[in-house]
Image (cartoon, rainbow, N blue to C red; front, side, top):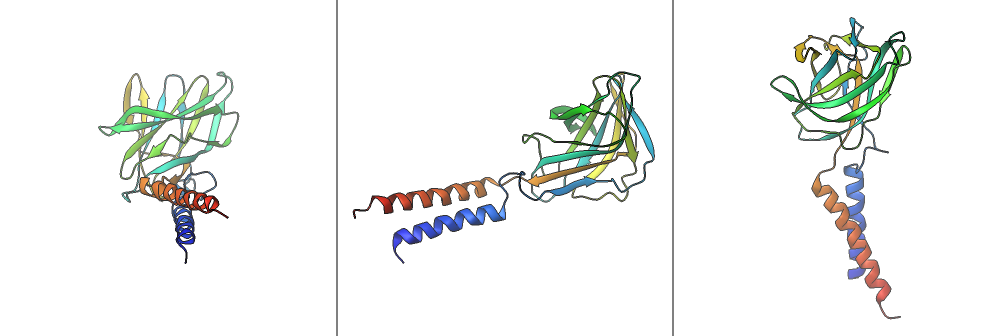
Length: 216
């Protein structure tokens, strides 16, 4: 086999292996369930208001993989319309001393305009590291809406639920339950995989350039 053909074959092989083994983006790639307690019976409702926020703790699996948040669905939500427009605002927080630490980024915001399920589409910047605890904070810009609560027993997904915390008058207090929700994500590619893909494409381009420049 000629050197040029070997270079082309090697470059294409690198690119294909990288694309098939590690998805480069969440979009268009299969995502996995990170947290899911939607099958549990509703045990209570917690009011989210301008004065009362809640934060759901969870821990990522110890598998050495980081995940990009793909979607977060709140299940069985309700709202009260006589207190203004109930806007649900969700953000990702770090964990510090078994309580919410600092905000890492916004997950999204939308109007809770009735009973049902509401899905938020996080930005590509929100990534979750292996064996790390986080909080999802729920607050209201105005109005009142309700989180449905469950027991974390029987929840599925790669991660694990922790306590639900309530913030009122500036302090966080554990509430010993979980929010009914589904959180999905896709693996973040390792730097070596991205480098392999780039090297493969570079090999293809270089080989084609050499071939096209050969005298007739």
